[in-house]
Image (cartoon, rainbow, N blue to C red; front, side, top):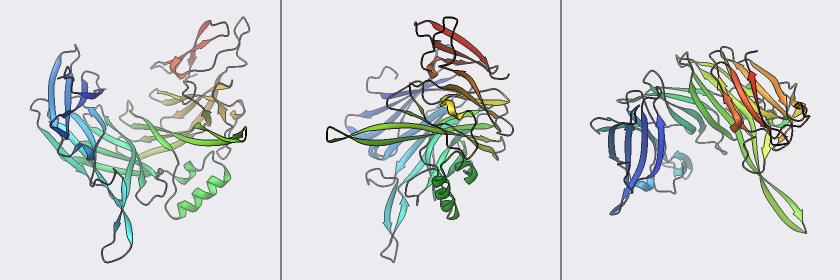
Length: 400
Protein backbone atom coordinates (compact mmCIF):
# COMPACT_ATOMS: atom_id res chain seq x y z
CA UNK A 1 0.00 0.00 0.00
CA UNK A 2 2.91 2.35 0.69
CA UNK A 3 4.01 1.90 -2.90
CA UNK A 4 0.57 2.85 -4.19
CA UNK A 5 1.18 5.70 -6.61
CA UNK A 6 -2.37 7.00 -6.06
CA UNK A 7 -1.61 7.90 -2.44
CA UNK A 8 -0.65 11.47 -1.58
CA UNK A 9 -0.19 13.79 1.40
CA UNK A 10 1.96 11.37 3.40
CA UNK A 11 2.48 12.08 7.13
CA UNK A 12 4.42 10.24 9.83
CA UNK A 13 4.02 9.96 13.60
CA UNK A 14 5.42 7.76 16.37
CA UNK A 15 3.80 6.15 19.39
CA UNK A 16 4.86 7.57 22.80
CA UNK A 17 7.15 4.58 23.46
CA UNK A 18 8.67 5.09 19.97
CA UNK A 19 8.11 1.43 19.05
CA UNK A 20 5.48 2.02 16.34
CA UNK A 21 5.72 4.29 13.32
CA UNK A 22 2.39 5.17 11.70
CA UNK A 23 2.32 6.33 8.07
CA UNK A 24 -0.85 8.05 6.88
CA UNK A 25 -1.79 8.74 3.28
CA UNK A 26 -4.83 10.00 1.37
CA UNK A 27 -6.35 8.51 -1.75
CA UNK A 28 -9.14 9.29 -4.20
CA UNK A 29 -10.55 7.05 -6.93
CA UNK A 30 -10.89 8.20 -10.54
CA UNK A 31 -14.56 7.30 -10.80
CA UNK A 32 -15.37 8.71 -7.34
CA UNK A 33 -13.46 11.98 -7.17
CA UNK A 34 -15.53 13.28 -4.24
CA UNK A 35 -14.75 10.25 -2.06
CA UNK A 36 -11.75 10.27 0.26
CA UNK A 37 -9.86 7.22 1.49
CA UNK A 38 -7.37 7.06 4.35
CA UNK A 39 -4.43 4.68 4.28
CA UNK A 40 -2.75 3.59 7.52
CA UNK A 41 0.48 1.58 7.58
CA UNK A 42 2.10 0.62 10.92
CA UNK A 43 5.81 -0.23 11.08
CA UNK A 44 7.55 -1.90 14.05
CA UNK A 45 10.95 -1.44 15.70
CA UNK A 46 12.91 -3.33 13.04
CA UNK A 47 10.95 -1.68 10.24
CA UNK A 48 8.80 -4.77 9.84
CA UNK A 49 5.30 -4.13 8.50
CA UNK A 50 2.73 -4.66 11.27
CA UNK A 51 -0.52 -3.98 9.42
CA UNK A 52 -2.11 -1.92 6.64
CA UNK A 53 -5.62 -0.50 6.51
CA UNK A 54 -7.63 1.45 3.93
CA UNK A 55 -10.68 3.33 5.26
CA UNK A 56 -13.32 5.17 3.24
CA UNK A 57 -14.55 8.30 4.98
CA UNK A 58 -18.35 8.60 5.13
CA UNK A 59 -18.49 12.21 3.87
CA UNK A 60 -17.77 13.94 0.55
CA UNK A 61 -14.20 15.05 0.13
CA UNK A 62 -15.33 18.68 -0.23
CA UNK A 63 -16.67 18.72 3.33
CA UNK A 64 -13.79 17.06 5.18
CA UNK A 65 -10.52 18.44 6.51
CA UNK A 66 -8.04 16.09 8.22
CA UNK A 67 -6.78 18.15 11.16
CA UNK A 68 -4.42 15.80 13.00
CA UNK A 69 -3.64 12.17 13.80
CA UNK A 70 -1.61 10.09 16.27
CA UNK A 71 -1.04 6.48 17.37
CA UNK A 72 -0.96 5.07 20.90
CA UNK A 73 1.34 2.39 22.32
CA UNK A 74 -1.13 -0.34 21.29
CA UNK A 75 -0.92 0.69 17.64
CA UNK A 76 -4.43 2.17 17.49
CA UNK A 77 -4.57 5.16 15.10
CA UNK A 78 -6.62 8.22 16.07
CA UNK A 79 -7.68 10.69 13.40
CA UNK A 80 -9.24 14.10 14.05
CA UNK A 81 -11.66 15.19 11.31
CA UNK A 82 -13.25 18.56 10.77
CA UNK A 83 -16.57 18.00 8.97
CA UNK A 84 -18.56 20.92 7.58
CA UNK A 85 -22.33 20.67 7.94
CA UNK A 86 -23.05 22.61 4.74
CA UNK A 87 -21.29 23.56 1.51
CA UNK A 88 -21.06 27.28 2.34
CA UNK A 89 -17.44 27.63 1.32
CA UNK A 90 -16.07 25.82 4.42
CA UNK A 91 -17.01 28.68 6.74
CA UNK A 92 -16.66 27.90 10.45
CA UNK A 93 -19.54 30.18 11.47
CA UNK A 94 -22.52 31.14 9.31
CA UNK A 95 -25.55 33.36 9.78
CA UNK A 96 -28.86 31.54 10.20
CA UNK A 97 -32.33 32.99 10.68
CA UNK A 98 -33.85 32.91 14.15
CA UNK A 99 -37.13 31.01 14.00
CA UNK A 100 -40.13 33.36 14.21
CA UNK A 101 -37.96 36.46 13.82
CA UNK A 102 -36.25 38.50 11.12
CA UNK A 103 -32.99 38.50 13.05
CA UNK A 104 -30.04 36.23 12.35
CA UNK A 105 -27.65 34.49 14.73
CA UNK A 106 -24.18 32.97 14.51
CA UNK A 107 -24.31 29.22 14.00
CA UNK A 108 -21.39 26.79 14.06
CA UNK A 109 -21.10 25.26 10.58
CA UNK A 110 -18.93 22.25 11.42
CA UNK A 111 -18.32 19.52 13.94
CA UNK A 112 -15.29 17.45 14.92
CA UNK A 113 -15.06 13.68 14.78
CA UNK A 114 -12.56 11.22 16.19
CA UNK A 115 -11.97 8.22 13.95
CA UNK A 116 -10.26 5.18 15.50
CA UNK A 117 -9.19 2.10 13.56
CA UNK A 118 -8.67 -1.45 14.79
CA UNK A 119 -5.20 -2.16 13.35
CA UNK A 120 -5.87 -5.90 13.09
CA UNK A 121 -9.42 -6.13 11.71
CA UNK A 122 -9.63 -2.81 9.83
CA UNK A 123 -12.93 -1.97 11.56
CA UNK A 124 -13.27 1.67 12.48
CA UNK A 125 -15.46 3.74 14.80
CA UNK A 126 -16.39 7.42 14.55
CA UNK A 127 -17.32 9.53 17.55
CA UNK A 128 -18.79 12.99 17.11
CA UNK A 129 -17.54 15.82 19.34
CA UNK A 130 -20.24 18.32 20.27
CA UNK A 131 -19.40 22.00 19.83
CA UNK A 132 -21.46 24.74 21.42
CA UNK A 133 -20.19 28.23 22.22
CA UNK A 134 -16.50 27.32 22.40
CA UNK A 135 -14.83 26.71 19.05
CA UNK A 136 -11.43 24.94 18.95
CA UNK A 137 -8.97 27.20 17.16
CA UNK A 138 -5.45 25.77 17.45
CA UNK A 139 -5.27 22.18 18.65
CA UNK A 140 -3.38 18.90 18.34
CA UNK A 141 -3.92 15.23 19.09
CA UNK A 142 -1.33 13.81 21.47
CA UNK A 143 -1.00 10.18 22.64
CA UNK A 144 0.07 9.82 26.26
CA UNK A 145 2.30 7.19 27.86
CA UNK A 146 -0.74 5.71 29.68
CA UNK A 147 -2.53 4.68 26.43
CA UNK A 148 -4.78 7.72 26.70
CA UNK A 149 -5.12 10.22 23.88
CA UNK A 150 -5.73 13.92 24.38
CA UNK A 151 -6.94 16.67 22.11
CA UNK A 152 -5.64 19.95 23.50
CA UNK A 153 -5.29 23.51 22.34
CA UNK A 154 -7.02 26.87 22.35
CA UNK A 155 -10.59 27.95 21.77
CA UNK A 156 -12.47 31.05 20.74
CA UNK A 157 -16.16 31.95 20.81
CA UNK A 158 -18.62 31.70 17.94
CA UNK A 159 -19.64 35.30 18.76
CA UNK A 160 -16.07 36.63 18.67
CA UNK A 161 -15.60 39.32 16.02
CA UNK A 162 -11.88 38.60 15.64
CA UNK A 163 -11.73 34.85 16.31
CA UNK A 164 -8.93 35.37 18.84
CA UNK A 165 -8.16 33.04 21.75
CA UNK A 166 -10.14 33.14 24.99
CA UNK A 167 -8.80 30.05 26.72
CA UNK A 168 -7.46 26.49 26.58
CA UNK A 169 -9.22 23.15 26.39
CA UNK A 170 -8.18 19.54 27.02
CA UNK A 171 -10.31 16.58 25.89
CA UNK A 172 -9.45 13.11 27.12
CA UNK A 173 -10.35 10.56 24.43
CA UNK A 174 -10.78 6.80 24.19
CA UNK A 175 -11.66 4.55 21.21
CA UNK A 176 -15.18 3.43 22.16
CA UNK A 177 -17.06 6.43 23.57
CA UNK A 178 -14.99 9.29 22.16
CA UNK A 179 -14.64 12.07 24.74
CA UNK A 180 -14.29 10.84 28.31
CA UNK A 181 -13.72 14.26 29.89
CA UNK A 182 -13.56 17.79 28.59
CA UNK A 183 -12.08 20.70 30.51
CA UNK A 184 -11.82 24.39 29.69
CA UNK A 185 -9.42 26.95 31.17
CA UNK A 186 -9.94 30.66 30.42
CA UNK A 187 -6.70 32.65 30.16
CA UNK A 188 -6.61 34.91 33.27
CA UNK A 189 -6.80 38.63 32.60
CA UNK A 190 -3.72 39.28 34.74
CA UNK A 191 -1.70 37.00 32.43
CA UNK A 192 -3.09 38.55 29.23
CA UNK A 193 -2.13 42.08 30.29
CA UNK A 194 1.47 41.31 31.28
CA UNK A 195 4.13 43.07 29.16
CA UNK A 196 1.45 44.86 27.13
CA UNK A 197 1.12 48.62 26.45
CA UNK A 198 -1.39 50.56 28.61
CA UNK A 199 -3.95 50.92 25.80
CA UNK A 200 -4.02 47.13 25.30
CA UNK A 201 -4.40 46.57 29.04
CA UNK A 202 -7.37 48.95 29.20
CA UNK A 203 -9.04 47.37 26.16
CA UNK A 204 -8.68 43.87 27.61
CA UNK A 205 -10.01 45.03 30.99
CA UNK A 206 -13.12 46.47 29.30
CA UNK A 207 -13.61 43.26 27.29
CA UNK A 208 -13.21 41.15 30.45
CA UNK A 209 -16.25 42.89 32.00
CA UNK A 210 -18.29 41.37 29.15
CA UNK A 211 -16.52 38.01 29.35
CA UNK A 212 -14.84 38.65 26.00
CA UNK A 213 -11.16 39.23 26.80
CA UNK A 214 -8.98 37.65 24.10
CA UNK A 215 -5.35 37.06 23.15
CA UNK A 216 -4.62 38.07 19.57
CA UNK A 217 -2.48 35.86 17.31
CA UNK A 218 -1.81 33.03 19.78
CA UNK A 219 -0.31 30.10 17.85
CA UNK A 220 -0.05 26.65 19.44
CA UNK A 221 3.49 25.20 19.25
CA UNK A 222 3.94 22.09 21.42
CA UNK A 223 2.02 19.75 23.71
CA UNK A 224 4.27 17.53 25.80
CA UNK A 225 3.72 14.99 28.56
CA UNK A 226 6.08 15.37 31.49
CA UNK A 227 7.63 12.63 33.65
CA UNK A 228 4.86 13.08 36.27
CA UNK A 229 2.14 12.69 33.55
CA UNK A 230 1.29 16.39 33.64
CA UNK A 231 0.72 18.23 30.36
CA UNK A 232 2.79 21.24 29.26
CA UNK A 233 1.33 23.41 26.47
CA UNK A 234 3.41 26.11 24.76
CA UNK A 235 2.12 28.80 22.41
CA UNK A 236 3.63 31.93 20.86
CA UNK A 237 1.94 35.15 19.81
CA UNK A 238 2.54 35.40 16.06
CA UNK A 239 1.22 38.23 13.90
CA UNK A 240 1.71 39.41 10.33
CA UNK A 241 1.37 43.15 9.75
CA UNK A 242 1.62 45.18 6.57
CA UNK A 243 3.60 48.41 6.56
CA UNK A 244 3.40 51.04 3.81
CA UNK A 245 5.71 53.87 2.73
CA UNK A 246 6.16 56.29 -0.15
CA UNK A 247 8.99 55.80 -2.63
CA UNK A 248 9.37 57.85 -5.83
CA UNK A 249 5.83 59.09 -5.32
CA UNK A 250 4.50 55.53 -5.27
CA UNK A 251 2.98 53.69 -2.36
CA UNK A 252 5.03 50.63 -1.44
CA UNK A 253 4.23 47.99 1.15
CA UNK A 254 5.91 45.03 2.82
CA UNK A 255 5.06 42.34 5.36
CA UNK A 256 6.51 42.26 8.85
CA UNK A 257 6.41 39.02 10.87
CA UNK A 258 6.11 39.51 14.63
CA UNK A 259 7.03 36.81 17.17
CA UNK A 260 5.99 37.97 20.61
CA UNK A 261 5.12 36.61 24.07
CA UNK A 262 5.16 32.90 24.95
CA UNK A 263 2.23 31.46 26.90
CA UNK A 264 3.12 28.33 28.90
CA UNK A 265 0.45 26.25 30.65
CA UNK A 266 0.75 23.25 32.93
CA UNK A 267 -2.20 20.86 33.41
CA UNK A 268 -1.99 18.49 36.40
CA UNK A 269 -2.46 14.71 35.88
CA UNK A 270 -5.94 14.96 37.46
CA UNK A 271 -6.98 17.60 34.87
CA UNK A 272 -6.82 20.66 37.13
CA UNK A 273 -4.98 23.79 36.05
CA UNK A 274 -1.59 24.14 37.76
CA UNK A 275 -0.52 27.49 36.29
CA UNK A 276 -0.41 29.74 33.24
CA UNK A 277 2.49 32.12 32.76
CA UNK A 278 3.66 34.50 30.07
CA UNK A 279 7.27 34.92 28.96
CA UNK A 280 8.13 38.39 27.59
CA UNK A 281 9.52 38.41 24.06
CA UNK A 282 9.28 40.84 21.15
CA UNK A 283 10.94 39.90 17.84
CA UNK A 284 10.38 40.87 14.23
CA UNK A 285 11.63 39.62 10.87
CA UNK A 286 11.15 40.34 7.17
CA UNK A 287 11.76 36.82 5.88
CA UNK A 288 12.24 33.24 7.06
CA UNK A 289 14.92 33.12 9.75
CA UNK A 290 16.44 30.52 12.07
CA UNK A 291 17.26 33.17 14.67
CA UNK A 292 13.69 34.21 15.45
CA UNK A 293 11.32 32.28 17.71
CA UNK A 294 12.47 30.11 20.60
CA UNK A 295 13.82 26.68 21.52
CA UNK A 296 12.07 24.74 24.29
CA UNK A 297 13.36 21.86 26.40
CA UNK A 298 12.81 20.68 29.95
CA UNK A 299 14.01 18.68 32.93
CA UNK A 300 11.76 17.14 35.61
CA UNK A 301 11.94 20.35 37.66
CA UNK A 302 12.26 23.19 35.14
CA UNK A 303 11.21 24.37 31.68
CA UNK A 304 13.66 26.33 29.50
CA UNK A 305 13.00 28.75 26.64
CA UNK A 306 16.02 30.05 24.66
CA UNK A 307 15.60 33.06 22.39
CA UNK A 308 17.28 36.20 21.09
CA UNK A 309 16.40 39.39 22.94
CA UNK A 310 17.05 43.12 22.79
CA UNK A 311 19.94 44.21 25.08
CA UNK A 312 17.68 46.67 26.93
CA UNK A 313 15.30 43.95 28.12
CA UNK A 314 17.50 42.74 30.96
CA UNK A 315 15.16 44.00 33.68
CA UNK A 316 11.51 43.86 32.75
CA UNK A 317 8.61 44.40 35.11
CA UNK A 318 5.31 42.63 34.43
CA UNK A 319 3.86 45.82 32.98
CA UNK A 320 6.89 46.89 30.94
CA UNK A 321 6.74 46.54 27.17
CA UNK A 322 9.78 44.63 25.80
CA UNK A 323 11.98 46.42 23.29
CA UNK A 324 11.89 44.89 19.81
CA UNK A 325 14.72 42.63 18.69
CA UNK A 326 15.15 42.79 14.91
CA UNK A 327 16.36 39.78 12.99
CA UNK A 328 20.09 39.90 12.24
CA UNK A 329 20.96 42.40 14.98
CA UNK A 330 23.37 41.62 17.77
CA UNK A 331 21.72 41.03 21.12
CA UNK A 332 21.40 38.81 24.17
CA UNK A 333 20.76 35.07 24.02
CA UNK A 334 18.35 34.70 26.93
CA UNK A 335 17.06 31.64 28.75
CA UNK A 336 13.68 32.02 30.45
CA UNK A 337 13.13 29.38 33.14
CA UNK A 338 9.77 28.29 34.56
CA UNK A 339 9.62 26.25 37.76
CA UNK A 340 7.69 23.04 37.12
CA UNK A 341 5.77 23.19 40.40
CA UNK A 342 4.96 26.89 40.72
CA UNK A 343 5.41 28.33 37.21
CA UNK A 344 7.62 31.07 38.63
CA UNK A 345 9.60 32.88 35.91
CA UNK A 346 13.33 33.62 35.96
CA UNK A 347 15.32 35.15 33.09
CA UNK A 348 19.10 35.02 32.60
CA UNK A 349 21.50 36.12 29.87
CA UNK A 350 23.59 33.30 28.44
CA UNK A 351 25.75 35.34 26.10
CA UNK A 352 25.82 38.64 24.20
CA UNK A 353 26.69 38.04 20.55
CA UNK A 354 28.43 41.41 20.19
CA UNK A 355 30.41 41.54 23.44
CA UNK A 356 31.42 37.88 23.60
CA UNK A 357 34.72 37.46 21.77
CA UNK A 358 37.11 34.58 21.38
CA UNK A 359 40.86 34.67 21.89
CA UNK A 360 41.23 36.24 18.40
CA UNK A 361 38.76 39.01 19.35
CA UNK A 362 36.12 38.25 16.70
CA UNK A 363 32.39 38.68 17.17
CA UNK A 364 29.98 35.77 16.90
CA UNK A 365 27.69 35.27 13.92
CA UNK A 366 23.90 35.69 14.17
CA UNK A 367 22.20 33.14 16.39
CA UNK A 368 20.35 30.11 14.92
CA UNK A 369 17.89 27.79 16.67
CA UNK A 370 18.96 25.00 14.31
CA UNK A 371 22.36 25.03 16.01
CA UNK A 372 21.11 24.06 19.49
CA UNK A 373 21.28 20.56 20.94
CA UNK A 374 19.49 20.10 24.27
CA UNK A 375 20.41 17.22 26.59
CA UNK A 376 18.29 15.53 29.25
CA UNK A 377 20.38 16.81 32.17
CA UNK A 378 19.57 20.50 31.74
CA UNK A 379 22.46 21.34 29.43
CA UNK A 380 22.47 22.79 25.94
CA UNK A 381 25.16 22.86 23.27
CA UNK A 382 25.18 25.99 21.11
CA UNK A 383 27.09 26.29 17.86
CA UNK A 384 28.40 29.66 16.66
CA UNK A 385 30.46 30.79 13.70
CA UNK A 386 33.15 33.42 14.11
CA UNK A 387 33.75 36.19 11.60
CA UNK A 388 36.58 34.13 10.12
CA UNK A 389 34.17 31.22 9.51
CA UNK A 390 35.54 29.24 12.44
CA UNK A 391 32.98 27.08 14.29
CA UNK A 392 32.76 27.22 18.07
CA UNK A 393 30.74 24.91 20.35
CA UNK A 394 29.57 26.20 23.71
CA UNK A 395 28.05 24.05 26.47
CA UNK A 396 25.64 25.85 28.80
CA UNK A 397 24.46 24.32 32.09
CA UNK A 398 20.95 25.64 32.77
CA UNK A 399 20.82 24.12 36.25
CA UNK A 400 23.61 26.30 37.59
